[in-house]
Length: 365
Image (cartoon, rainbow, N blue to C red):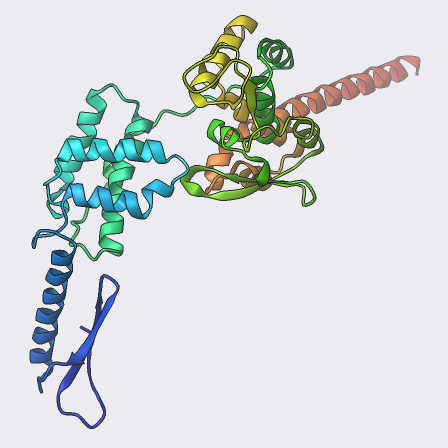
């Protein structure tokens, strides 16, 4: 309890904060126990008043009010705001707008995960769009809104995600695939291959994010985290000749008119069009089992093979944990094995040659 006695006074004073508002004064109590009870009552009154002003139930925040507030304060500012809004809407439908946030239990979270999985959604998607999203809302409610949020053991509700297969583009596949991609799409794919950027990071790249003199590119990735990707000579050669017809870097010429664009207009490449065009390009080039995200994997594999610098790769890819980057450790391990095999073969050859010479000397004697 935040109570104390001011110098020269017999009564106890209080000082506490509720939802950013500070409350202080004198309890009028001469005993510490009575002062604590008075402060607790004043704090509860302050919370009730804050809920009333926010239009909430005296019992706490509802799901509908919580997701709305989360969206206004942080969700709408996410790089993938559309996805955030979709996730929040799903949570609201699942629990109901009037359900109290404070009433959600571990059993409710487990039922939510089961419901999401019943829609045949991949474990990683369930973790990201349901469990992690609800945790973000409830954590903000507890830490910033002073809501009585129950204790949830979130780690027990996270589904095991299958180990992602790292697919590397071969040199021959690279040539045939890029030949199959149309202008605009080809440059975007090459940028991912040379920088290790994710699809969304490529699509959202704007000219203002490129510092030609500082030789770096400002990339905003997952969780709105910003990193600097070095502007290598290859990236400069790729980006510099591109037309500056739009704020976004990667554009294409509209071949068929629509409600939004006329034929011949220059428009930024969009995710849906990129996905379908890239899939057609892979099919035409006969590159099997390859996704756009595998361009990022190819970059990481090649970078690590060339440099062996795991820490630098972590910074370029924007991984928050080195353990994530360690997925590519197989590259250095495989290269080390090839070098050891080559060394062993050379050693055996040398020993064999030395042994033959010694036998020949004995025979001569």
